[in-house]
Image (cartoon, rainbow, N blue to C red; front, side):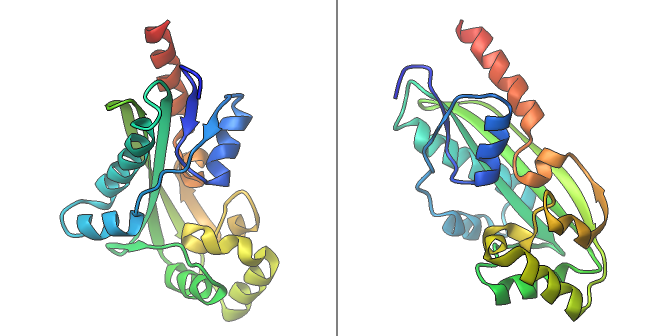
Length: 199
């Protein structure tokens, strides 16, 4: 890894796509952390917003200590619904249960991002989006799951708004990038500032 390299500490295809489309050159080194354990330990003692921030920081720092001369981006997203954190569905049955739980209600997405280098956190932020899912019938859910296939099983909420999932909603408040999993514009600003300070 070259000095000054940029690393994304995430295997998320959506986050990789966002950075690539913004014209950034970066390596991908997914953080080896137990996210479920961290969430479990934070449950009851941290807000869902703070949980997203903590997870983004843990991911960034876990990779940054291994590549001390690189700038590392860590990110996390929490879906909060009725004071519960919703997990990735993992299967069609899980996706079905998620959609029936969320339909007709409003949930929030907390997307956090942290930039770290070595043993230092250089910058962090979190942004929120609020999404109102329309009422769905059994036919609506099954037709949607037939259309999107198993790629949706790894998506929190069982949807991607950049695809057919947008049809599930009647109202969305928040930044597009926040919903996709990373507040991109603030991150790009932070990276410019970090680069200018190290020049």
